[in-house]
Amino acid sequence: REQSRDVVVVMLLDALDEACDGNSGFEAVAALVSKEFIKLPPWVKLIVTGRPQAESPFSAWTPDWITPSNDDNQADMRLLLQSRLQQGCYVAAEDVPAAIEVMLQKSQGQFIWAKYAFDELSAKEGLWKLAEVEAVLPSGLYGVFRHIMSTLKAALEEEQPELSALMSQKLLPILVSASVPLTPAQLSAMAATDLSKMATLLRLLSNLFPTRLDGNTGKMKAV
Image 1 (cartoon, rainbow, N blue to C red):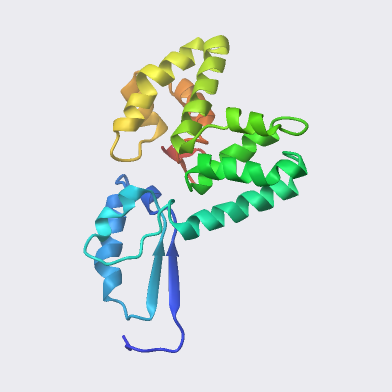
Image 2 (image 1 turned 90 degrees about the vertical axis):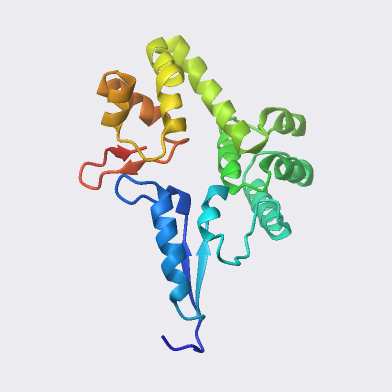
């Protein structure tokens, strides 16, 4: 409880919006942190990352929020894009500066976008033309989700149409409306479908929706 100290302690709480308190969502964890952390000495600092909805529990604080549009965040994104484009053989060397600007605008400052973008760039052999980068890479994280979802849906309709119908008609509406993480068994029951089919579909979607694994079995515990 000492009020001054030479060393500052910084705690990092990453992905707060993906926290889980039993079967509850992140709100209970965020409320606890918001209530209790402020009681600590001033030399203890907190850095929280999360989606915009993670801000509301801290409305009583006066935090410095760094949003994707902040200049500092944009500068960090530019450095990441520059490093990745220069290290990898994605575009011609003379196109790197222009590609950085195109990707920076499309990213909307969201670093997870860069992960999906470079996955897409890596899937092609050889160099991308600048016009291809601009035409193929979607804009924003929601654009990435739409692109991945439409690609998956097209593949499922051709190879496993029953899973395509399960995804669009039952699973996605349940996930979007759920206020707490759900287990594969719960999702299967709510969708009135076989658990093995639900598990297969969840594995295909695991790069889009956060999943929590059971430490004992390694299987998905909640989505």
